[in-house]
Image (tube, rainbow, N blue to C red):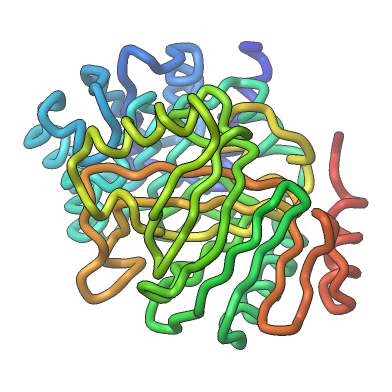
Length: 345
């Protein structure tokens, strides 16, 4: 495991972030983080010529803005506004909190990546063994197609059938593993779309739902961009309680939709950062949405959570991209084949 994470960390720092001599790399972590991963990132930063800064903070009760009361937020914010790179390895994430929003808006040179509580095997699968340039070609083409559409529809044999409208004023982005320039980075292998406000309608049946022990038993009924009901027995009842605990209407609102195209993620693992990028699947995020993704005001909420649906059929207007989890579009198929054939298993 130590040799694996050393290799992953080396690829991250030297190939993906392309750390330059003297750059400061902040690594945030809490008591739920894997110290082996943090130490490997620290060492890889030094080996690349960078200056590592590890910030160990208390593990918050809840993620994002709901965790602010548990963190020394003034000190953390001050540090993160000056670094060149920030890798978030917290088990309860700062993502979308005031700390994150301030650092991202004020630190114009910041290259940020969230890995959350990913395990070493998951990091190895997600960050190594694929061709960055081939992935870039596929994801950029899907993004181009999405921007040209007016409506997105996603279905699955598990009962999912949901649609929403495109808003060109909202963010369209993807991550391919190139973190060498300032950006809000997440693990590679997806295209992210922020739906038009109040436009999502239909049913989402999850194969993996964050903060639910058995996400495949939970389905959301969506109306005008908001969760109007959670269905699925005891797990649905528990999840209703989780949502209600925030006492925040915006926690029920759709935030973003990620289309998964990671060539090495072919089955659910239970690790959210990995599962969100599953080939031919999608991720739906709810709650807080940054101003940078949904200008001019964003969608302020106390936290953010995600759920995954696998083996989806994705339609942009009448143009079908995937069929039951496999790329079927004639323009995308050659790009997908080249990417899949180049995978280093």
